[in-house]
Length: 624
Image 1 (spheres, rainbow, N blue to C red):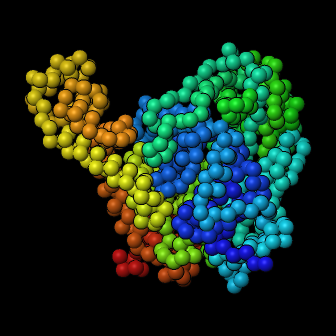
Image 2: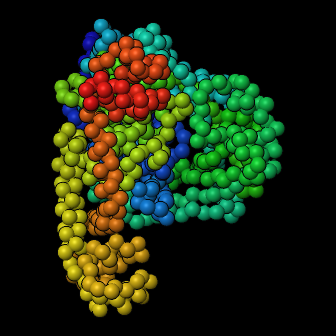
């Protein structure tokens, strides 16, 4: 019996779910294969979505018609807007989700998508013919055939868990690892390496003294992840809690370092520098007497808590003893200890920007297999891989986002151009055009593209059109409505801002950092009437308008810079040069340009080790 599909997605983590949803929603007959159908979109580490730089990715996924933002909004048990004290380019919504309900909502979402089917099994082999992937073989001996395959295998490729000197095979604790694919891909000419990540202890909230911690209450305003217009968060909103380690805790940890897999030579792979284990913190920051921890709920109906900041692979006894030195944890009970995990990944310079592999046609990689970490980074790669797998099957140009269009574009360009030397996590500092790539305007940047693809539906597109019209109406009113000084100066002084010397346009008042649109509207009835005309999502539209007006100068300047750089993005050089024959290039440039084979001059300029002189040589050869 032969089973045929358009697209097969291997792995149902965050990359796999958005990949399968995208390809199926675009019309491809899609099969999602997972080893455990009850752990679809499992939040393996922190049950949270968003935060600094990551939120832009989630909102971009949503703007493109992906599902992560919608599922997060429907399963959030706490929502907070981080970085409010800074400019809007740094505002970062973050939500704690109910771990179990997150899985349930994703399963419900996938089950409702036409053309999408799910199979529980482990893939052990790719079926390759003439350097083209045509299907997969599973541990049950079943062969599934497809025109494109996406590997989103997370930490499961030859996964190895560490708790002290105890080593267990697995992709997550109590879940079997995946074997066979790494070895086959290496035999096909791919390069593989190992990475390491870790996760903290899970704590029974009934054993914790919450009176010895500081409470962090969530927010319940209009902000959310999805641009779709639906009801407020349906789940009970819960608090997070902060506390600190102490010297007694550190002493226990130091005494146990000889049993740490990170320090006794047991773990040799690459770990995340920006998210260190607690044992790494006390070694690297030996002068610090305490480190902040965050106790975060796992769900609205469970006592399980996640201890953010205490990732560890130390033996169970040391983890427990160290925690017991913290007053709030004196009587602590746990569900399971923290652990480290090593797994295989494939350096992403082996990919095109579409996330299709350069070596095997119609084979795509997404998520941690590319050396990234984080649900958001994985989901965005899955979405782009799902879109491009569908395009490969049905025809069309690859869907690629530029660095000035999306954080997703920055992420993928970084991966395929620069590669990784540690688990890749998105930071705002990685994006050159942060003012253009704000979390508030992802729909304005991307939804039209998704609508043209067929991934964003008419409902989402109509919401975008309505939003644009309302913003344009407010901006036009503000720029054309005149204000006389004598009619408003006393009110301005009461708000703590300088009175006017002469009449101005309304927009000039809104530019003042001390004033908000709502405050200005409260002083000018005609403007309030204009705002009252907004039929839906009033708060969201007012905020978006205010950002556009207040930061217009920065936005325009950044657009000009982006347009200049983009000229080089259109200078195609892929397959145009035998780099080793160009004598004027440095040896390093010859090696890296040959290995990566960049699409454009702009991509070549971003390859580490490529100098401005190397770029000038190529431009001269191109007659520029």
